[in-house]
Amino acid sequence: MIVILKKNPNPEQVQGFISWLEGKGISVHKSIGVNETVFGLVGDTASLDIGLIAALDIVEDVKRIVEPYKDANRKFHPEDTVIPVGNTQIGGGTLTIMAGPCSVESEEQLVGIAKAVKASGATMLRGGAFKPRTSPYSFQGLGEVGIQYLVTAKQETGLPIVTELMEISQIPLFKDVDVIQIGARNMQNFDLLKAVGRLDKPILLKRGMSATYEELLMSAEYIMSQGNHNVILCERGIRTFETYTRNTLDLTCVPVLRKLTHLPIIIDPSHATGRYFLVPPMALAAVASGADGLEIEVHQDPQHAWSDGGQSLRPDKFDKLAGMLMTMHQFVQTQPIREWE
Image (cartoon, rainbow, N blue to C red; front, side, top):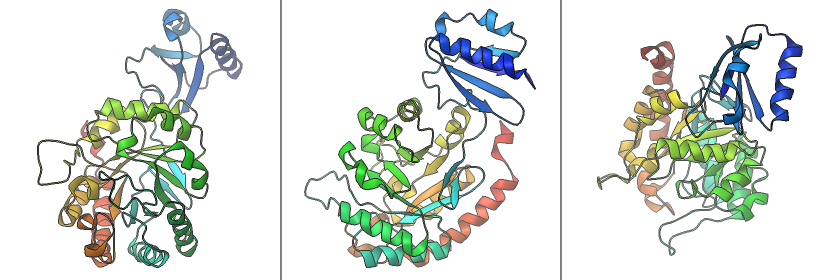
């Protein structure tokens, strides 16, 4: 249920209303926007009398929410969520570019890539320390050593770092990681989602390869229900009948999720396509569709990469693409797509 307050409501009446709701076991989530203040009520709201609430002097309107996700729902939080990360932010009109290798291979490799992508305009460094792989015989990542290399690259360049967490026991190793990524395979690992929901760190949640929009938002809800509202949604391609590409990139998700939720939306064209020459056009299309950012794989020597070299851009190609992305972003900012709704 959401309650929209009138402009300039009496503070004492507002506090009395909140206390009354909390006395009934209802959690009140406040969203204070430019034009209105919205209270999102979470709990057993079926027992609440809508007519009684609507009759209060401070209340403008009351609506029941039929969607199962509450905290992630735009109706609860009309304003876009903006998530600060280090010296940058995700959302709020900023184009976030997370770039780096699929796998961390060595300190020299990672620091070199970090310096290159930063010079090209990347705002965050991505790199896999723990690698979930389809085959148990494939490279599984450097683990804790890989995280140490990521922290070193952060110290060398100032770029915030994002890397994937695979299980609850690894959480203590991520204390210096700026954004924790939950991979597609773990999108419905609910115990893990609840665990990161108790952390004070932004969480990049990747869509499962067969997940619906609602399932993705319900996974975000698991995180947010534990108190962590700094969730970033990531589309990385879904599984369809097509085999030419690694996955099928669903860019429809951007306008759809923008309508359903206030959370930032990132696109990963590298994992979605699996082919380096498809990354630039899909990255540009993602920005054109209104995405808040991109996660792009970059490697100095893709042919000898320890994982997923076929979908990685060389630093010079990334440099050219980054300039094109900023131009596209500037154009989109002058032509807000949401005005077409």
